[in-house]
Image (cartoon, rainbow, N blue to C red; front, side, top):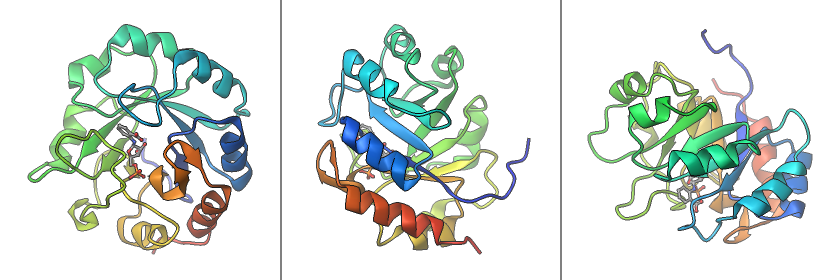
Length: 211
Ligand SMILES: O=C(O)c1ccccc1N[C@@H]1O[C@H](COP(=O)(O)O)[C@@H](O)[C@H]1O
C-alpha cells in the first residue's frame, strides 16, 4: 500500500523516565523509543521497560531498540512493545523470523545502496537512516549527507542522526521523510530528556510543511 501524504511523524528515542514520557506525549510525539541494548548509556532493563510501557497512553507507539540481540530476548520484551527497531547488523532472514512488526536501522556508510536495502529488508515497516560512525551502532548525535536519500525509496523513511530543533525543519523540507527520530538533540544529559527541547523540536516539525 502506498503511504498517503501526511504530516511528518515524530519518534523520541532513549526514554528512561516517566516524566520524559509525559513530556514527549504532551508535546505530541507519535512514538517513544526504549533502548534495550545494554551497551548504551540510555539502556533500560526489562523491568523498567514494563513500568515505562505501562505509562504510555493508547495510540502512541512503543518502540524497543535492539542491536544484534538474541531473538529470545527481543521476544521477551515484545509484550511491552508495539514495534522493534533493529539497529545492528541483523540479517534479513533473522528480521523476517520475528513475530512483531519491525523497522530496520541502516547506518549510512559509504557505498550503501538504499534501493538494494529496501529490497533486502522487504518485511520492514520502514527504514531508519542514521549516521555512520565506525565502532558505534547509533546514537552518535551526528547528521549525514541527506542528499544521499533517494526520493522514491520503496519503504517509508525514518530520518535520524543528529536532528535538533534547529535543523529538523530543513531536514523535512529536503528529505520529506515519513518520520523523524531524535534522541541526543532533546536531551539535558544521556538518558535524561529536556522538556523544553522536546517541545521546541515538535513545534518545528508541526510548523514545517514539506514542499
Ligand atoms: O541511543 C542510543 O544510545 C543508541 C544506541 C545504539 C544504537 C542506536 C541508538 N540510538 C538511536 O540513534 C539514532 C540517532 O540518535 P541521535 O538523535 O543522533 O542521538 C536514533 O534512532 C536513536 O534511536
